[in-house]
Length: 526
Image: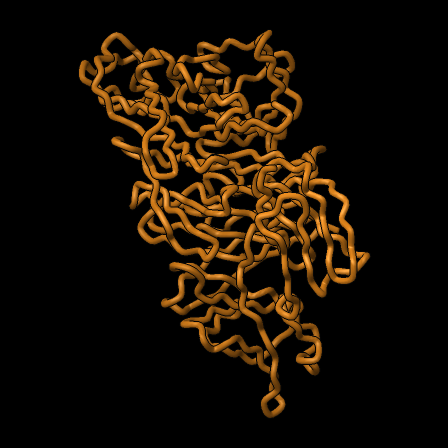
């Protein structure tokens, strides 16, 4: 069944940062969490987590700055880039800041940070290089030559070890001619945002993929020699497009899928008759015969292109989460669609906010401790109450006290402080009967608090056991990898315990998911 939900927070308490309002269209999406950072000006931005029901689980207001690329890494840490800091902030599972990461010796670029499986950091930086561009008649949209001493912003790719020592330093300026640039993205003759690289991907073979928006190109770089292996798209494209007659422009978020395919978000923004609707794309690349076969695509609106930003995440079940960036029409921020293009989930912010990227995670590697709501009767009036130990409260009704009277039927939830400057919500309560609220009110996470969990041994080598009063022979937990993919392993249930044989798993981090809890364990090598 399809639902259309509209969330409005009519709030007046200035001491508590208010989250932006949005509408959510929901059509049976899978359970999970969506990470994004909403903003429409640099005055403020909101890293946030939404659930599959369209409720805000967590948010943080960042004042005086845009903050982009809020995401969860495989090691369980989170990060985002606030423009006021010019470095990435790293948060732990308690939503407290534990580190900052930036380019070594150069200015950090906001577009990409990846924490690799070995703990290394892969990120972008940039340098401003003075160049004579008088031979290039690209500028001011009228063929004006460039300045003899133009400032050219050129990207740098770096890899740092866990101690932030520089391991790899690759400068686009030394490997590409200036005319690699797509002239549509060139403006004034004195300053040129040249490559505008916006995504990095550590490829399966150890090499690096980089997306450069102003080249309209994906480039593969040899991690050992620093040589360019191939150009995909752009002026120097080396691939034959077999099933795609439309070239991608100003693309974002290149990623390599487990099956070897390549995904990207084609913004479609270009000049004259060459622009087209923004597209989510999946290509099958033959890197020997140099062919690119388009195997899947999705277009939300053929008349809607994206001026900047955006992402595509293809999930193991072939659902896709698409962030549309800044669009020329509509107000869509992101959506999830299935493999046939059926829309499962969609978010539109009321103030036309957008997000640089959106990421979906079926579960989290740690628990968010959300406040529990209880109900009590005082002289015939029913109240909802939250623990009084929090420093502030923000109910969706606008109330800012620890307890509120139930005056109407409907949904009730409350935000309380969480981590450094953030807020977490309770599970929503649906009040349907004003004459007998308390008997029907149970916080969604109340059952969770009554359960105790044990996961042992951890780290584990041959087998791992989870024990909880939740478990019985009809409720076998699931094992998932860091990408959220389910691993088919037989579990042996005895009483309230379930034991898995993990001897054939590769060494690494895995998760055991029950109905109410996800726990992390480490499989060590033999």
